[in-house]
Image (cartoon, rainbow, N blue to C red):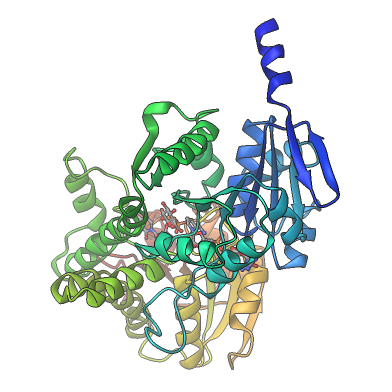
Length: 481
Ligand code: NAD
Ligand code: UGA
C-alpha cells in the first residue's frame, strides 16, 4: 500500500504548456481525435478503467462534442451512459479544442471516419483518407513534444508509412512513433466488447523506438485486459488483420445467405442447416444467421477497400473472390424485395407496409448502410406507403429517407405502426419484436396480412396459425392461399 502511494507520487508528470510548465495529476495525457462510434466508447472505457490517465476526446463537429457533454449522448449503446457518467469530468473530457489537445497529449489516437471514396481515382472502392490526412497534418503542426500516434481508424494496409511521411515532412526534430491499434468492437455490444475483448491488437515498427512505443500502449490496455489477449505484431500485419477480420465475418453471412436461397428452392430450412454446420467446432456457430443482408458502416467499405488493394497489387482472382461477398449481399436484398412483390400479387402500389426496425442491427440507433434504407427506397419506387418503426433509429431513418419521393410516416409504437397495414417486414432483430402480441397485430391489419421476417426471429408456425401469410428467409413460406 505504502509502496503504491510512493509510486503514485513519482508518476505525477510535468507537462509543458504554451505558457510554461504545470504539474499534471495524471500519469499520461491521452487524446483521441474523432468522437464517433469508436472514439467515444473506446476512450470512455480507457478513462473508466484507468483513473490515473487523463483522456480527452476532440472533434471538428462541435454539436457532437456538446452532446457528449450532455445527458443526451450522440450515440445509443447499451451501458455507455453509465461509464461516461462515471468518468466524465473526473478524467474524461470532450472538447472542440483540437490544437490544444494535440499540444498537451503524450499519446494520440486517431479515430476519424474513413469512408469509401466517392470521387476521382478509386471512387466507389478505395478508402477516402482526406479526414485522416488532415488529422496527420494538424498533429504535425501543433506538436512541440514527442508523441505516440495510434491508428484507431480502419485503414488500408501500409497507411502508417504515409502517416510517418506526413508527420516528419517538416523535419522539425520532433519524434513521432506510429502504431496500429485497430478496433474490433461491434455496435450494440461495444461496451462488452471493450471491457472483455477477444483480443487487442497492437502493431508497431520492429525498431527499438517502435517496440518502446508499443509497450506503452500495451501498458494502457493491460490495466484491464489479460496480457495473453494483447497481441503484438508488425505494423502491416496489424493494419491488414482489421480488413481481413471484417471480410471473414461478412463472408460467413454471405455464405449462409447464399445457402438461404438454395433452401427456399429445396424445402431445406436454413436455421437447421446453419445449426448443423456450425456445430462442427472447426466452423463454429457464430455469424451464421441468415438475414436480409448485412449492413453497418464498415463491412461493405472495408471489403471494397480490400478488393481495391488486391486489384492495385494485380491480384485479380483474390479481388474477385472477396467481391463475391458483396455481390451476394446485394443479391440477398434484391431477393427480399422480389419475394415481397411476388407474394403480394406483383403490385405494391398503394399498399401500406410497416417496417419493424430500421437500424442495421439491434441495440443501436445507427442506420449506416442498413439494408432497410435500400429496401425502403425500392418499396417507395413500387409506390407502397411506408410506416417505419424502430426503438432507437427513427431520427436517423428520417434523415436517410429525406427527399425520397413517396409516402412515409414514422411511429415508434409497433402496434400503432402495424395497424391498418397490409404487411409487416422485419428489418432489425430487436428483442421487442419477438415479444409482441401478434394476434392483436393481425386483427388490426388489412387482410390478407403478410409478415416478411428478414431476420428469422419470429415464431413462424404460430404466426401462420394466427392467420398471417409468413415469408421467412431460407425456409418454406407458410401461406393460406
Ligand atoms: P464516425 O463517423 O462515427 O466518427 C468519426 C468522427 O471523426 C466524426 O465525429 C467526425 O466529425 C470526426 N472527424 C473527422 N475528421 C476530423 C478531424 N480532422 N478532426 C477531428 N475530428 C474529425 O466514425 P466511426 O464509426 O467512429 O469510425 C471511425 C473509424 O473506426 C473508421 O475508420 C471505422 O472504419 C472504424 N471502426 C468503426 C467501428 C464501428 O463500429 N463504427 C468499429 C471498428 C472500427
Ligand atoms: C462489425 C464487426 O463485427 C466488428 O468486429 C468490427 O469492429 C466492426 O464491424 C467495424 O469494423 O465497424 P458491426 O458492423 O457493428 O461490427 O456489427 P455486426 O454485429 O458485425 O453486424 C454487422 C451486420 O451483419 C449487421 O447488419 C447484422 O445484422 C448482420 N449479421 C450479423 C447477419 O446478418 N447475420 C449474422 O449472423 C451476424
